Picture 1: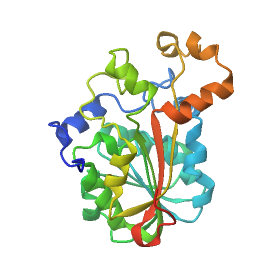
Picture 2: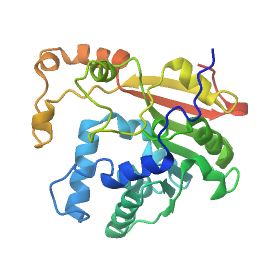
Picture 3: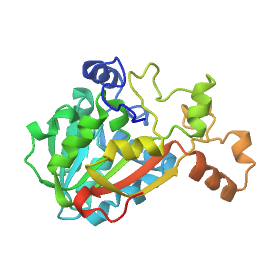
Picture 4: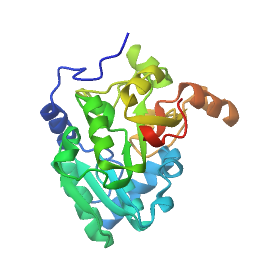
Length: 273
């Protein structure tokens, strides 16, 4: 039976926009004055400390001189790293509050980029067919009502020899187990309107007929005591702290919250996972 990835939830795009406008993703990653150089530096340091797999997945330096579209740029942490590496960067964002911070960030650091306020389900209304060498969406698609529509729109604006890199939440994960048991929630702030969790079957269906899957890897278990983490104290939960690090990494590969997906347009796909 085929999974319906269109309008999976009753929440609307406007509900999603209002949610992220109230508290942009990672906006509390620093206690410094908002939108200052020191604030943005601390936000970046914390993001990559807590999610160290991001730079290796994004491969910032690889995209020097290439046209990069980030779907859901948030407050611009990955954005500035694409731009610093020499990418011809464009970011789209549904949340005006997030987009304003990303623009301010580029201004402070003297970086060049193009920013567009738009719904990712309508990318082709803003960009020409076959424009981008890379489309990157880290933790974004699973928050929109029509996830198949976003993928279809990405297929329109990516080059035939381009690459699509995205992160999707994993259903078979430690975090989802904790959510199901009432010990956790998908996002730092409560009541996220939409946060779809994916199986491998659902990923294949999301990309079917549009992209060929090159690789799908699972990673990232948040190990910290949350009450201390919010105070910038990085103490591991005792059950993770006592594990040999190799064992914890093995657990991440099987029960990580993040599916890291690499895909190429269907006709040029290297492999079918």
